[in-house]
Image 1 (cartoon, one colour):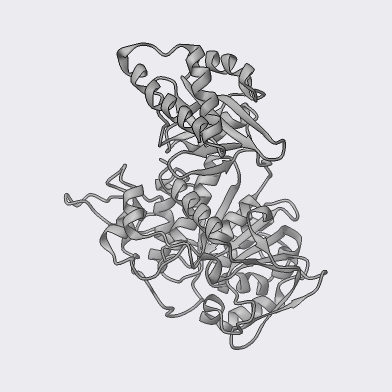
Image 2 (cartoon, one colour):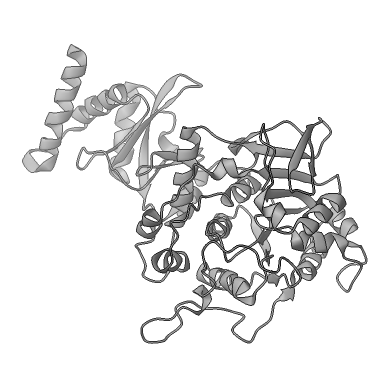
Length: 454
């Protein structure tokens, strides 16, 4: 107790000296930083200018000081910090049972791409978000991930965030979005994707639109007017590439075009809506894009499908997405080649991830004109919408380590839209299991961090 009290007294006294009464010497800083390491066993970040802990921004350590783990190494860390950003960080490595000290740089919280690039250049495993108290991996393997997003855009707002995540992943060079399939009929729904493509800086991503799908599916939030929003001066708020008189390629046709252009077993499909377009793709015959029929084309080109849907565990009940167009869904499950991996994201995984409307608007307060913010400002989005759809996208890019998964097996669909899982090590299917509160908090903060980037 006496030692802790002395350390606390030291930390309380020194900030006063740092505010103009007298300069804190480097020798005193060694004592302060060493004391911080003992008082904050999980880690800390300290400004040498104010002797305060910054509460906002993205902290990354420099490579030059990464092997500093004892008191003797602190003078070199402090010297490097003085020469650069005057920030020092400390963190505990449980694997090596060592407490490391680093000279650190803090990026603005809306500069995640730059922070991650700096971390990779400096061989750092993570970027630490000071405001959200989460680590973001930076030492990911930059795989050649080619994704087609299949979405029922125009009803639930989680589709907006799933697509937003893909744009942010592209900013970080973590994937390539080949195209977006809109499986909810209606040109306005494809126009929403057109708005988002332009807003996030990817205006040339092709969009396919379903024309023979679910006639009148449930609409939870009517944001189909988003593409046509105007300012008080009657000026369109959001840019579009296709325009009012433009047309979209039929969804299964765009599937065939995109798949035919890709190497074998290279394409990942993130299906976060109905499977109408996928079923029509599988039923399709040879055409101008490929001499293969739909089943052959999917077998040749698709590596995995990440699908938001399914009800597993003890409950046996219909799945919403599959039930909306049960005939298409049954055909999809019948024709899908067994060689294609299927990873399901059940609704209960996203249920705890409640991105409240007031948080969405606050996270986007850096601009008055944002398509997602517009939706939350002018429509009632307080309808129980959770972050279900982003889970399929996140796993498609981040990989299996981000989620707890079931063993392998096979999934069959009943005429009532029930998903029946049969364990089998040779099966092509797995499903995500719900995370604990710590995991849910981390994932929601991760989505929010992506939302504030601009």
